[in-house]
Length: 410
Ligand SMILES: *Cc1c(COP(=O)(O)O)cnc(C)c1O
Image 1: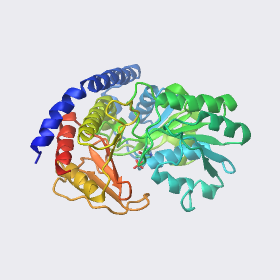
Image 2: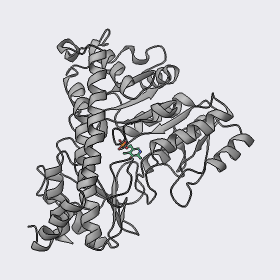
Image 3: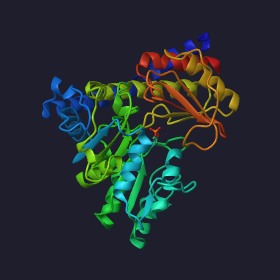
Image 4: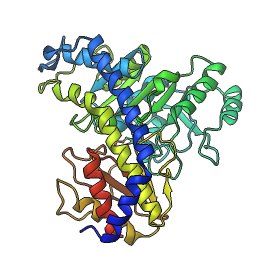
């Protein structure tokens, strides 16, 4: 049930966010035209949708999808693959592509996202981690205002040999804001002015199509992300991507399959239609998610909660954080989101352990694709300060309805 109070407040919210929604529409327009141009330049036709079996040699769909994706990401090459089990896997392939044993990985945006800790070897040293391969790790903290510390980066790079620089665009489950594409450019310029051969790797999760430029436009060497987030448009059922310099994408492909095989194999028995259609939808779907985030930010601000970003602040990812402040409010909020979903609306989200995460996490998601976070979802680590992280929304109408329902539970 949506309360009278929330209905009244929502009317005010709708008026307050008109300007923000118009800006989001402009970004979606530009990105949609960019996607269409790439499809036209690569002469995408029905024959690109056909499936392949076995080794998957000469898969026209796979080859054109990679080429289209590279053009959209403004990179030399790309590998879009259902063989990546998730975003973490794609980022892992990018890390191993850019680094060799004995080198050091430097994060320019502080502590990476939870699921990367095991990959890097920040927590433990499981077989297959960078640490086990003799790759060490260090990080530079973001500044107080969330901006990258370019001076600290320059100082560090001029005094220490570094194998690769790492950037996490999105906030993940932290209070820091997203790093915008211009700031990614500053990190790339700083790194390459010291040594143009140091690869800059970007975890682009939740960032695709939020701005009109991507990290590839500003000098990133390899970018990785998940297809069940922004670039899948809510239609691609699984997978991830890497996009960047050809040598690095080839190296990531070798890590995904095998040296010598790279991206030349990999059948798609179900064909490529949903991949092409999802990528086509993605700029629009990302806009729906951003509108939902802006609506949530303004509504909860009016209800007296601190939100980040604020409803009128610049965005470079689709995540909206709301400081709920207690375990009870967090649970009620997640229940509201879950109960308003088209799928699994009857289940109750309960905090539990998740693979790759430290401590209990509560997740509300009533999604068509399991765990898809371009669909409306709310997650939160069950710990102080009880911030909820909200993202997605396939349609603004359904997103708005869910936010109003969650707000009515608070
Ligand atoms: C979602 C996400 C990832 C990867 O997560 P998967 O669940 O493995 O797809 C990596 N980094 C950030 C910042 C993310 O938000």
